[in-house]
Length: 371
Image 1 (cartoon, rainbow, N blue to C red):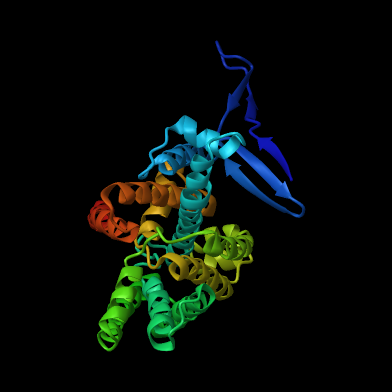
Image 2 (image 1 turned 180 degrees about the vertical axis):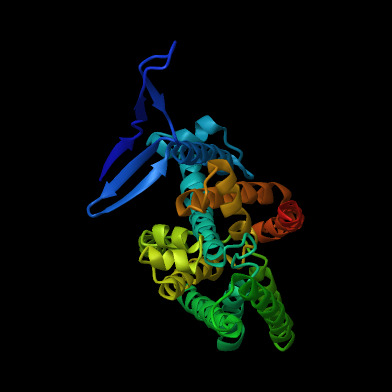
């Protein structure tokens, strides 16, 4: 992997009175080219700085999270437990065995949800086009509930398969219902909202038809929590996540092309329908990965890409900043959830509802301003 700095200014020469003969004109932000084999990508300096700052804040919150609990540890004790072999055995047990898996899964799930939100918002060209809103998360939840309540399996792999199939089935149904001589993003969002509402009723009906104990188990799992996760769920989830992130590596430029329209994407050599199909599969798999282990965690996918876009001041959504901001949001939400003793999914729903209301008002204001 090589990285080169692409920040040479354009030069213009002239002989204006009182002016130097050569002046530098900067038409844009400095960029860095990252090359891995035959693949390369450009990253603006502001994007690199923002990503670095987000990682630093995330690590700081992680240290605080690893020290919070019944046995409170200072940041120094947390760092000693992580890196000092001579640290207290009880501290190392608490940090490594009990708290570190939860923090690492919060990072993993946040990365997956942030990337998934960026994918679907790029496909729909709309900030409301996240898997939470257009029904794909609800489809994953429905598939997982069917496996848990009707098949009777609580295996991570069985629930994961059910979540993936449920999300994929809903995605296919939404696409087919929204397709009318082409796929319009607004129609896709409206159909997705309707599918999400219908599936929520189906989920409630299924829980009414089982025993109270099973319904309570599904309801607790459906609130979205990271408290019961350990290395048994983290290791397979990490392997699947790495494979999906490799797939995301092929989506950066095609998704940016789709944001300016199908015709423009075609002129750049991007097949719109093929890119949407592959992107949808990757996005649904990322959502199902989180749903299978922690239950549905709403609104991270909705908020992370837009926050990342504003921080980087980018012209289009970027997968890496969106994923990192998603990880930061979920780590922070999980820390607050531990302090108030609530499942993290409940907290993200409360905060996300406020963000959704602001986003709707902001979009309406922007439309009036254009008129």
